[in-house]
Amino acid sequence: MKYSAFRADVGDYDVFECAAERRGLADDMPLVKLNRRSPIGVASTSIGRMAPGRTTLLGRSQVPQGSIMPLSRDGLVALGDSGWALSSLPWWGWALGGIAAGWYLKGASK
Image (cartoon, rainbow, N blue to C red; front, side, top):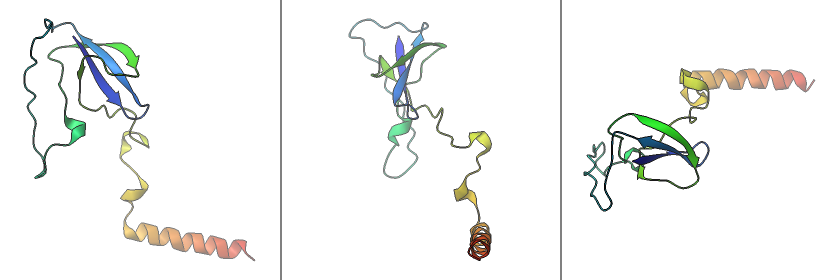
């Protein structure tokens, strides 16, 4: 059976095949168990069916094929896996950066 996972960084789908699973035409898929993490429901990015066994990457496609897997987070980390970002700076880091930028610009204007 084929599975597709959306890749937000490139806007297409990775297509996989799971040889461990075979379904006949018009067979019903089992219900997806959703973990509710907020009072308003489940995030759409976490909904999908995981393959029951090992998958083989078949390639990429502009349209999904088979069953949809949860959103792939590959390629979405801006600065690697370090987790460092400008938004993680404390308030005093921004203040020191502003003072340094002002001091530099004051010296550049003379």
